[in-house]
Image (tube, rainbow, N blue to C red; front, side, top):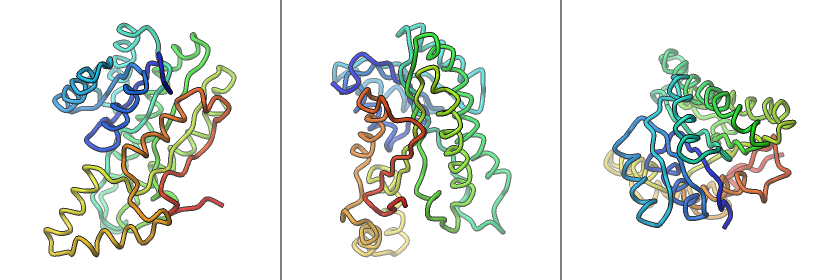
Length: 259
């Protein structure tokens, strides 16, 4: 199995790709540690993993708090003895407004969650990964960093900073055997996007036209399913990516083709 025997920590586990990644990693042999602020949802996904024969730990965590991040790491090491992979996918999206109307406090919060939250988590896992001789870190980014969209500014700028975290730390931590990469996610078909589409329909939109407008921009001709997007993250966590670090893997069905 792709992640057999590895211990993988996933932050920001929610009903979209975070859940699918946790389930998928467990199915591929990983012991999965899930972190988010919603304890009830974490318990639900933990139950799903265990019902499938996997091992999981759920820890309520606010990545805005260094003590929370350190507590998550301590709980992981106490239960599983090591940390092989870290996925930084904690999420906060400011109100969907243009810059002139935006609350810059919300933009600062997006930066604190997406960028500083990742840095806090990396700092917390670093001593353990160094001691064991390596590890893999995957930062989850967004297509909005490639294609600016009015209303996405605070979120995209925070994720753009996370891209520099990826490059910087790939160079700084490579000597410890620690790889740092990012995935650049586009549309992902799952609960969040389905909710977005349902909301547009409820506001008077035509479902076929809405979905068609999205799919029409994607060369593969479909909205990438979130469970399949999660496979790209698992690849970067796995030994199949042993020589890959500092990379940005585009996971968007071809909507953006990097130069």
